[in-house]
Amino acid sequence: MLYPIPIAVKPIEDFQLLVTFEGGEKRIYDAKPLIKGDWFGQLRDISKFNTAKIVSNTVEWADGQDIAPDELYFASKRVIGLGYGAPK
Image 1 (cartoon, rainbow, N blue to C red):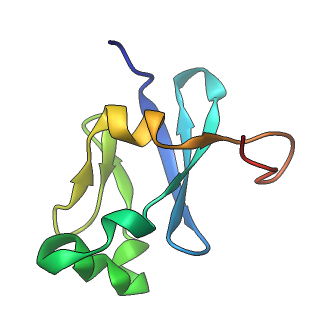
Image 2 (tube, one colour; image 1 turned 135 degrees about the vertical axis):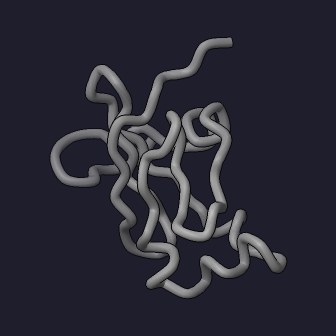
């Protein structure tokens, strides 16, 4: 299955990511369930979480943690309206 390609990411409140995909679609990914264990648990440090950036068509953090592109899209919620809106 093809998935849209993320082109921008912005960490927002409560360990969520505002992700913009090709075509302009904006979605919110809740990373809280991901932040556990030794590897991803490092992202509980908000300064580390806020290092999220787009690398090779997905979101990656400074220490190398990343999210599979299909997970990033299909586990996120579409943003409605201006601002963050109400995800659906």
